[in-house]
Amino acid sequence: MSASILNFGIDAVYFLTAAIFIIGLKQMSSPVTAHRGIVWAGIAMVVASVATFGAPQISLDVGSINLQLMLVAIVVGSTVAYISAKRVAMTDMPQMIAMYNGMGGGAAAAIAAVELVKLSAGGESHGLTIQILAVLGAVIGAISFSGSAVAFAKLQGIMKKTLRLPLHQVINIGLFIAVIIFGYLVATADSVSFNHVMIFFALALVLGVMVTLPIGGADMPVVISLFNALTGLAVAFEGFVLNNAAMIIAGTVVGSSGTLLTQLMAKAMNRPISNVLFSSFGSDGGAAVEEDIEGSMKEIQANDAAIMMSYGQKVIIVPGYGMAVAQAQHKLKEMGDLLEARGIDVKYAIHPVAGRMPGHMNVLLAEAGVDYDNILDLEEINPEFPTADVALVIGANDVVNPVARSNPDSPIYGMPILDADKAQNVIVIKRGKGSGFSGIENHLFYADNTQMLYGDGQKAVAELIAGIKQL
Image 1 (cartoon, helix red, strand yellow):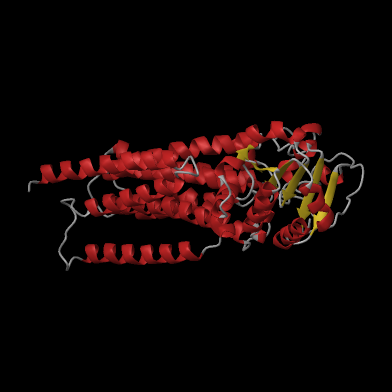
Image 2 (cartoon, rainbow, N blue to C red):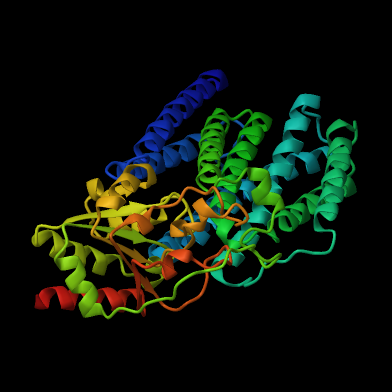
């Protein structure tokens, strides 16, 4: 078979797999079809990977060291990914996504590194345009890799505090200028210096760390989404370097979808991306300006809360990351079923930034078997809170804080929130009296219509279930 026919066949397979990627991504937009979309995309990736082995430049000689290294990498990577994916808890899924985002960016940067090191060893130049794309992909991929590593460390609890150095943004600007200078030297030089390549990558990796260090936990969903977009962009650029259509299309799809998601997440927090990257929201830097809190927290017992919900007509459940930590989603489903059996309308309110990544709460509730039709986003559920007898808030904090509407000096002012405070009664399940990730007090907890049910989320819901069964 001639090389031209073989390349045409491989490109055709790449085109088919790219189409399946797009279809799979579309299916992931709904919980009903998300599983099928993921399976299809996974199969497409396997097909594209196998097709790549048919490329003329890849030797299929069993004695080829390159072939052996590729097979070992595939086996080891697949094994580690399978085992970790099977074992990871749903509460740890955000940091796993951050890690995989970083690995994608790191892979793109590694591709650029190989091509640039070849040039430093006297290899044939790809031309100015391709070398510029290689450098751009290297910068973006390296920043995504090291930044995602920091995000993982924060989400995993390895790095418990944010870090903001004196003149932090000035240092970042200096690093950025240095990256541009060395990137220019690498991209435009007729003979690339190996030292310049190494310094260039080192600076890009450090820049990724420095950009992410001061960003607090409240902004992690946006940061993860942003790095996902950057990874896709880096992969697309390196696809041009390797003349690989699959990488170009897949990277473009991931980059564009990640960018749109990042914009939606930032909008949900009423914060521009620049504010996420260069502010201290959710970090230890700076004290939040708060208005005086009126009222006091009022405790309620589980039996009383069970009675309140059992004799109502509509109950809206608002889950947050605390629910995920307590792994209370299955108990919530059981409690919801009991209330529905009594003729009560039960719905679940999801804020776009609830949890540690987009869709985190939706996945947890779907895993527990909650009816998709009862899981509503902010725009759909907010008009229903005034008609709800009870809003049950479990593990959520900033996304139900009414100061986002009332206090212009608050760091979360203007952020769209769930209108839980407008329900007739509010029950908040919470382990203690601490503030949310933004570091400010939640005025909802002090409202006249709010009562606090303290304790572990799963245990508290189990007590509510027992109380409902006794009625």
